[in-house]
Length: 220
Image (cartoon, rainbow, N blue to C red; front, side, top):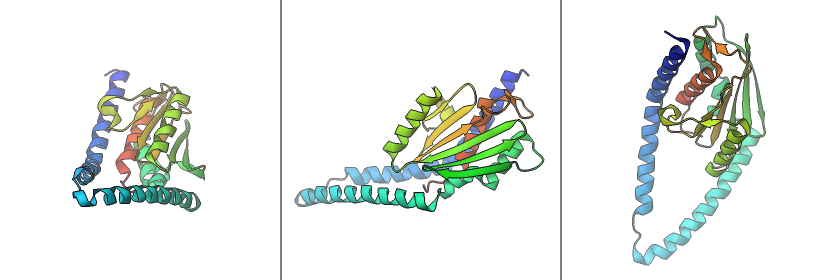
């Protein structure tokens, strides 16, 4: 089997596993969205319509203020539990399994400017995984779009994006947007062929990213 075919098969296998693990979470989110949609479209009694609109506006303003307060508090408290997973033992074990390592790799983590970064010191070079936490969906999308332009990354299309905005570069960077977080796996410090299966840096970064996505919970 050719190296390209091996890489493609390996990537698709990773995609299938990640999609399976994400399906329960995605189904739950779909159910919530359907309930919210039904509530939003249900007509209010005529006598209460104006009061409901006023209350909705006040609630939206309060929610925005609360979201800002939560984000400020989060910066003091540190990264979310979901973000910490990129440097957690489960991710270390997954990377060790992908690369057939005998022991967990050494890591160094950092929290700065709403970004949690975990650097894996591998034999072939550094693997840098980061999560940018944003206060709201609009800010998250803006950061994702800015990063995509900065990296000159191409969109990941079709089933491979797992239903999320995603992009990748030819030299080993993969970016996913999920909820209010932007996940960036940067493997461009590694050799051109990575691991025992000799996959490309980009395929390796993609596999790591989808593994992390499969572990995330809908709580951030």
